[in-house]
View 1 (tube, rainbow, N blue to C red):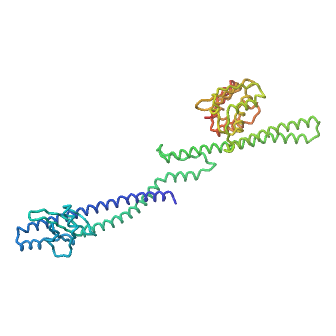
View 2: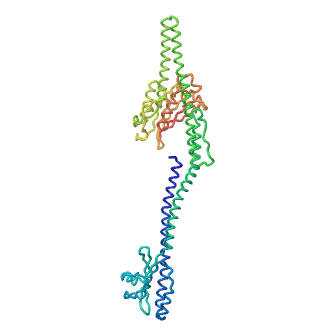
View 3: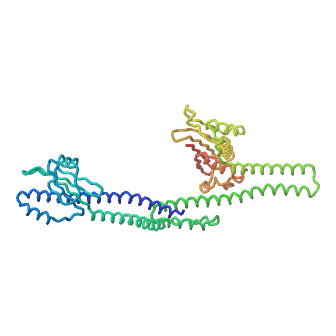
Amino acid sequence: MKVKNRLSLQFTFMFAILLFIVLPGIYVQVEQNRKESFFAKLDDRALIVGELYLAQDNMSPENFKKVIEKYPQTLSNEVTRIYNDKFQPVFIKEDSVSWSKNIIQQVIEKKKTHFTIGNQQVVGLYYIDNSGNFVVIASAIDDSGNQNMKNLRLIMLFSFLVSLIITFLLGRLFATIALQPILKITNDLKIIRSASLNKRLTLTQYKNDEINQLSISINNLLEHLEQSFHDQQSFIAHASHELRTPLTKILGNAEITLKNDREKEEYKNTIQGIIKETEKLSALINSLLDLSQASIDTAELQKIRLDELLWEVVDEWGSKTDLVKVNYNLPENPEKYTIQGNRRLLFIAISNILKNAIKFSGNKEVLCDMHCNENGVFITIRDKGIGIDKQELTHIFQAFYRAANAFKYPGIGIGLSLAEKIIRLHNGIIEVTSIVNEGTTFSITFS
């Protein structure tokens, strides 16, 4: 079912519930007013009959009989009875209706009473007069009122059904209008492909509009996708070039050596060159595998004390140089600098940063500092080497990117890219500051 139909049905259902509550309430109120109005008419009729009867002692029987005959019967099926306080009828119009002693007694006790029998409404009045005490009971059927209520029921039923149909149609109209921006977004997204990720959705003038916020979120996603595709294409191009270079050297050296007979020493030098290029190729392939497999599996997560991990990294590279100095400024509770993560990946990330610091330090001291506070754990690796140009700082975490002053040093430009990805996977932040010929500082934060 389409969203606009579902919204229309939901809106219609809510409106039906509202009408189902309101219309019966109106009907009950009108019916109550009808009954009260008809009871008021019966009260008047009973009062008039009582007054006429009480005036009988001032009239001759013949005159009173003429008044009664002229008394108009304006209510449908009207019946009036007068009883004395001994339950004896004293004034009865010619009909077959009579009331029981219980009803008469009830009128005497309550002085005035209203009740309904079937569709017949009944009024009882108790008169106290100098000529005696009397009970007047009048009953009638409100044919006109009942017919009006029947018509009202039909009108309400018809209005209910028509209202639901109109509500559904209006709901579809408003849902179509409301969903029009989403349909536009859908149509715009249909034409965006990998080759046109630079296109963006059009924003409305209403900044806080939900549709506008959706468009902004999609545009941000498209921007990330465009960057990812660009990085992927750049990665493939660089990886192909880096893989091709050692393979070309290996193949070229082997072919040249096999063309002619060589001295033993020449064969030995060629094989050593092939081994050197193979080692580079192997290192490159391992780096590419590490970069492609840098993801966290929940099964590999464990508690890691960052001070111990840093010590292991420093110990590995410290065995190759005595330039690394470590400073710990940590509280006694190790839980404050313990995180959940993949130990192997974090070792690779910190190791790559420290290896770079040692490589580019120019045999100068490399400082490793670790401290923590309520905001997180902080690891700083600082060297006093060649530094990085300010314009190149934003690119150093891209795969295969190497600063202009780093080409004379061995490397393929994957280490920092891999380190940044691993730290980001552990909800960490890596930042870098650098001054050319003065040194570089990498700051890692785990919060």
